[in-house]
Each structure stands twice: as C-alpha cells, then as structure tokens.
Amino acid sequence: MSLFLAEIGKGLAARWLTLLIPSGMLFLGLTAAAMLLGHGHALDAAMLVRELDAAAARPATRSPGAVLLLAASVVLAAAGVALLVSGVAGAVETLWYGQWPRPLQPLGRRLTARRLARWQRADEAHAEALRAKIRRLDADGAVAADIPDTARLNAVRNRICLVRPDRPVWTADRIRAADLRVHAAYGLDLDSAWPRLWLIVPEETRAELRAARAAYAGAAGLAAWTVPYAVLALWWWPAAPVAAGIGLVALRRGRAGMDALAELVEAVVDLHCGELAARLTADTPDEFFPESGDRITRRLRKGA
Image (cartoon, rainbow, N blue to C red):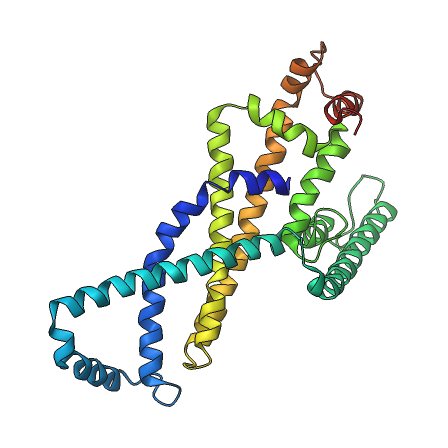
C-alpha cells in the first residue's frame, strides 16, 4: 500500500511547490529579522524598524535595478527554500510509513517496543474487563455498575493501534492495519488487489482517495517546516516555539490524514471486492468469503 500511496502522490509535487513559495518568502522575512535582531533583541520591534529604515535610506536600495535584483533574489531564494522543504517532506513521509534508514533503526526498535508495551497493557485491561463482565452478569443479563467500561478500554487500545503494533510510528501501523484487516476479513492480499480495484472504482471514489492523500501529504509538508525553523532558532530564539507548534499541528494532521485514507481504502475493498471477484472469476457471490479472496490472491500473485 505504501507504493500505491507514493504513486498517487507524485502529481502533488508541483502543486505543493507553488504553495510553498509564499511560505518560503515568509521564512526569508523572519530570517532577515533574526539576523538583524539576534537573541538579545529578539522581540525588539522598534530596533527592527530602525534597521529597516536605515537599510532603505541607503542610495543603493533606491536604484530600480537594485530593487528588481533584490525582488528576483527573494523569489529565487524562496523557491530554493521550498525545494528544500519539499525534499524534507518526502523524508518525513518515508519515516511516517515506517521505512526508517539503518542509522535510525535502533531508535525505531525502541519506539516499536514502547508502543507494543502500551498496547499490550491496554489489551490486557480490555480482556480483563470482558472477563469480569462475563463473571458478574446477573440472572437478568444486567451488568454490575462497578465493572470497567469495556467500550472505553477498547477505544483506548485502538488509539494506540488497531492491531498488534509492529512499526515505530502510529501512521505506519495504521496503513499496515488496513492490509491485515482486509486479509483477515476477505483473505485478500491488498497489495496485489489494489491496482485492480483502482481501475474499477468510479472516478468520484478516486477523487476522494486523492483528496485524502493530498491532506496527508500536506501534513508531511507542514512537518518539514520544523527543520528550517529549528535551524533558525540557533540565531533567533522565537523560532523554537514556532517550530514546536508547527510540529505538533503537523503530527495531529498527519495522524488524522492517514486514518482517513486507511478508512477509505478499507471502504473501497468492502464495497467493490465483489465486483473484483466478478471481473476476475466466473463467480458472482452474494457475499465475499475468505475462500474467494484466497483464490483471487493466488491468481493475482501469479505464483509469486
């Protein structure tokens, strides 16, 4: 599924670059202010105004050629920053998919182990609550008031992961959960089946998937801005809280975006797996059973 997500995201690059240039110009403006003010006068607006007035009063800045050259330089620099951030956004998506480079794999294993321990505690609490509920049902089928809320405990566990965690980050496990849930319900290998499902779904469904993918890519692009702002904080401390705020918002949006995308992927399978079976086999089942999924998976894999 990560290959599919990367493929439909290719057309987003040019659009995101266009959107990033204004953000790049804002960053350049803050960088100029940081160079003028530094840490000691970080929030001194009066000093910034004086420095800008002094720069504007210089004869060189009144030349039309100098003004045009400065404007062109700013636009080109903003485009350069946008390209840099776009590259970082790709790296962020790679990390969010759980594809961590070798130097980061020890950290990834520790994060995975911590997420797994949290999930196991939540899973055991849910299981114990279910056992207690079964033990304490009265003759009328009512549940004692002091039994833990199993629905809440189930939600707590699912917020950690819908399946047993196996990746360092939530987003990677969420798209992995879609694979596992589809296979458990239908016996269908999603990696093999998805390209064929993509060809038979209506254009409206594809548009919904592209929109969800764009929202997820947007969150990764936002997260990428934490890098230049964190670097800027070395010279201007107000950039540090800006970087932290951007990172928190990006993480929330990335999680929400991946959840929406994975839900859409599962919904497409739920609604169109019967049509896929009809297209690939002579069967037109009223219900799609795992046996049908296994047969389709063997055909699609072509022995691989």
